[in-house]
Length: 316
Ligand SMILES: NC(=O)c1ccc[n+]([C@@H]2O[C@H](COP(=O)([O-])OP(=O)(O)OC[C@H]3O[C@@H](n4cnc5c(N)ncnc54)[C@H](O)[C@@H]3O)[C@@H](O)[C@H]2O)c1
Image (cartoon, rainbow, N blue to C red; front, top):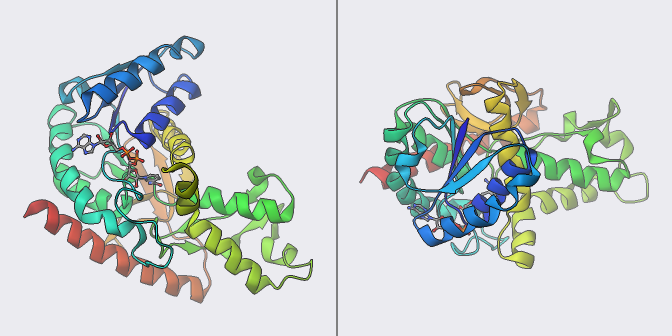
């Protein structure tokens, strides 16, 4: 199985490393970047690590090398730091990168689809959900999804686990909607060991409202906190991206909060999605309170506007 990664910056190289280290996910990884020297360098670096994993070849190349690829991961484009999207008070957040990265996608997607018409296309570049809508438009097919709110859901689980002093693996918690500032944290269904987390939190004197505010803030702006330290958020999303490629290649039908086009919402958003061969196979709306429904509705409006803008920018 061949997997392509287009955009070999911080996120693309972390994704490729995670693919190599997961082992057995794919047989061949093709790295493409407009900065060909960078793609060559990352491929050479990873090739020397590959003998420690089950058999996998890593190479750099051009779009023609994607022929026969089962999945192409798109991580090319400007990131939050370079694109000026690191201000916590700016509600647009990652949407500030929309216009610039829509133009990058107008360059990349047709070239990918020409050589790999059967490939599932996974969008990581920000803002990933409107760019996935744009990718569907440019590709002319529906085998497109974005990493969506899986990374946010993992962050939610980790933050809750810290406060509950349990391991994150045992916390079930979802974030749905936009991977961005309008995302919706589903507190009402967050559980540990079958117990609502809201029954367990706030027992040490801190009010539940205050604690919720703190957690929401930590998750909504986790990318900025990381960027303030390192310049780019890469390892978490790299691991997420490799895990999602694996779910597609193995036709796992894994239930994960990733984003695909929902015909009932008329836009790409994260819900409880079933991921396997061909990408997202089903999408289900989790049980929510009326307040959570309202917040999701607002997130959908944000995403619809952004998707329209992305298509307009890329096609004019
Ligand atoms: N979905 C998520 O949860 C998530 C998490 C972290 C970062 N991101 C996003 O991922 C993207 C990449 O971030 P990064 O930190 O790796 O950026 P980066 O600047 O390190 O790398 C981007 C790479 O894209 C390449 N590129 C740009 N235009 C190209 C084109 N037309 N064709 C081929 N290659 C091109 C650049 O040469 C560069 O190597 C950003 O949009 C960032 O915001 C998303």
